Image (tube, rainbow, N blue to C red; front, side):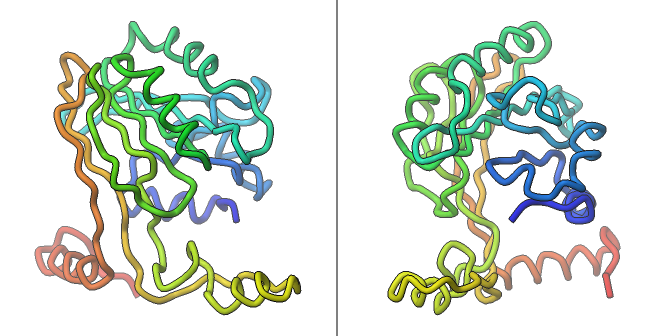
Length: 235
């Protein structure tokens, strides 16, 4: 679990504009320097103020429109943290005059937590997108105030697995209670995600679509880009 500096830069070089972190943010101590120095990574805003990292960041989209990214952590079945509603209020008080397009990553277990935050922020942010459970939900919608919402955008990783781990290991431990290392699975790699269309003038969402790309789709897309000279092949 956790993210290393090497993996952070590898993901950024692959095309990510920003990385949000969840409950494993401090699993790798060597990431602390990146958290303190790089604006392309954010920690949960309801962590203590002195926790390493920033509670939001502002990036620029391809059309140069500023986009704010906020990360929050849920409270149900999670390690105790501050109220995510109050934390959101604090961050939005600082952002309201700076940017219209605001994306919130809510890293939480419970759908009730996620719906609570989405309803609370409806009309105040462009999107509330849930993460953490590894399983994409089919509830993508635009709420009455114009905020796009989905309980969980799913996992990028091996889907012939139990939320990314080898099936046999998890089944064995569940059945026998014998501690077994949960090895990372490798088969049926997919990219899950969500596309949100936002009006840059109002900050309201116009559309939301689930995305699922299979490994072969990704390989063919990469080969096409290599053939066009857009990206270079790796060893």
